[in-house]
Structure formats: structure tokens, C-alpha cells
Length: 183
Image (cartoon, rainbow, N blue to C red; front, side, top):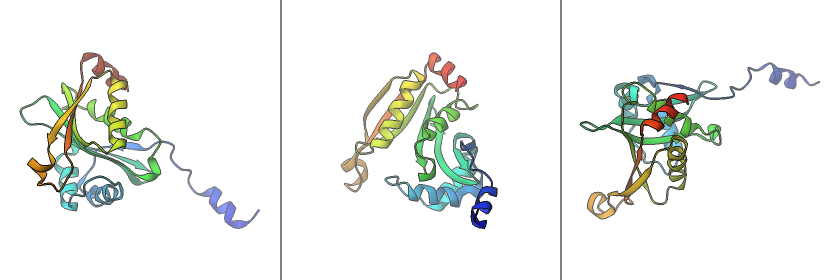
């Protein structure tokens, strides 16, 4: 057997499932790189991702696979509301097809400080099929009702430079809370 095959066999095995954890400030640059690699996500500044990972770590999650960040959800509780808002969901190529987006969402809504939210909200453009699929599947899994309506409009809010963002609302009723805690 060739020597290079033996060396490959001694390398540490690939982790089967990504590990979910709260982000920290040192993750900011790697999160920024992941988001930039996940079109059609809007690209924020690296500083925005650093602040999210530091100041909003309790309402954000990263997924690591073999020491690399392959998943990210940024979110926050909406001030004065019992709603959890998901800003961005990013899943890198290495982790696609694992249901990682849904796993991260379920982990977040089960956290202290988020678990009492009555609804989950996010905005999605009509052409973002991956996001629509994720949130529809998530709503079905937790038994929540999904509704949507135009929210940030192309002309009124984006001066024509960005497609209308539709506000998606998913109820997190008592049955859904039982399911999410079991996830």
C-alpha cells in the first residue's frame, strides 16, 4: 500500500455532525467570510459580524465542523415585542444537505431568553428559494403557522436598489415549544 494512503488513513476522522455553540468575538472574521461565500445573502461589514458575535452571542449560533465555522445564524429579540428576529442564516458548502439550518433554528428557539418568544420573524425576498424552503420546513416541524407580507419595500425603503423583503412570521405556540425543547 502506498505511503500517502497510510498517512491519509491516520488523519483524524471527519466529524459527522457540526457542533453548535454560541459565537464569540474572535469568530467575527470567519463568520464574515462564511456570509460572503453564501450568496444571495447581503454582505455586512466584518465589524457588524464581530458585534453580532460579541454583543448578541446569546441570540446567535455558529456551527463548527472539523474546527471550521460552516454555519451561522444571527438574530435578536425585537425590543418591546415577544418576537425573535432572525437576521441571517448561512450554511457553507461543506455542511449543506445536513439539515443544519433547521437544527440551528431549533437550538436557538430553545435557549433561555428566546424560549418565551411567541413568534419567530425574518425577512426574505421572493426569489430566495432556499430561505423559503428552510422556514416553511421549520414551521411544519414545530407545528407553527407561517404567514408573510411585504415589509421593507423596494421603492419605499430601498430606493429601488434592493428587492422587497417579505416579513415571515412563524407562530411558536405551546405545542411548538414542547416540540422545540425535545429537538
